[in-house]
Length: 205
Image (cartoon, rainbow, N blue to C red):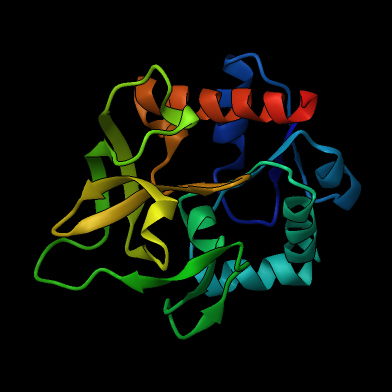
C-alpha cells in the first residue's frame, strides 16, 4: 500500500484517485504506524514551506517521515512536498526542511511571470529506472520557489523557466517531482506509476 501523508496541505485526493486509476491501493493518513508500515510514502504539498513544516512538526509527522526514510521506504515529494525534502527554504523567512536531500529553496527572481504556472518541457538529464521506457514531454508546474540542490547528480530531470530548474530529484529511496504528476497527462501518470512499481520492487527485495 502507498500512503499519502495528510498534514492538512496538499492535493491528497487527486493523487489518491490517480493511483486508484492505475490499480494501486493507497491510503490518506496521518497515523504513524500506518505510514511506517506502508510500501511507499507520498508527501504532497500546496502552500508555503514554513506553514507546511510547522504542520508536519506539530503533528509529529516530520519525525515519522524521517524514520520511514531511514528504514529505506521509498518517499516521493510532490511540488511543495519535493521542496520539503531539502535542507531549508527562504520562503517568507528562513525555515528548516526535512533535510533528506541537501539543498536550499529560493524564489524565482526576474522580470517574468511568477509563479511559474503551466505546461513546460521535462528534460531527462541522467538515466534512471524512473524514466525507463518513457520519453521526454510536457508536465504541469505551479510554483514560485524552486530547489537549488547541493549535489547536481541528485537532479535527474530539469525544465527551463528563464533558467534551468530542478524538476525531478532522487537519491537512494528519496524522490521528488516539482510538477504535479497527477495533473500532467500521460507522462505524469506514467512517472507516478514508475515510482509505484519501483516501490513494489523494494517491498519484495
